[in-house]
Image (cartoon, rainbow, N blue to C red; front, side, top):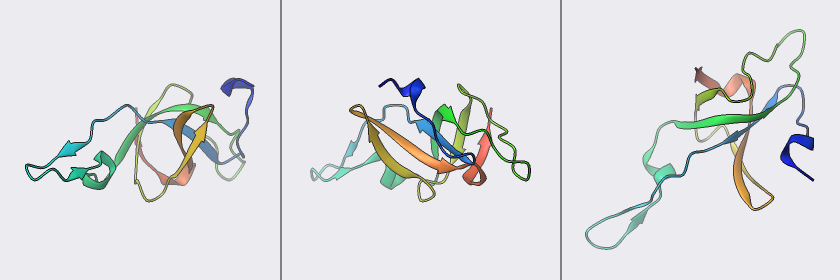
Amino acid sequence: MKLTEKRVLPTKLLVKEPKKEEKVTQSGIIIPEIASRITCEGTVVLTGEGTIALPMSVSIGDKILFSPHAAVKVKIEDEDFFLLNITDILLYW
């Protein structure tokens, strides 16, 4: 089943995060990129329809900024995505 054949709930969206490299300190400690960020950036790959009270304001292909604590990391077809609510979007362009 292809990603385009999947659906999310009306106020949810699926976001693909760009690949980031982990940082390694001089002593060899690996610091994941997500641990050193206050916000996450990603590209919308799937959206719900929205509701009358909460219309979907982003489209597939839009880039968004969101809190890493607001998203749920999911794996679909061996790819990592974030699933989040439309109200967790801080900025989009």
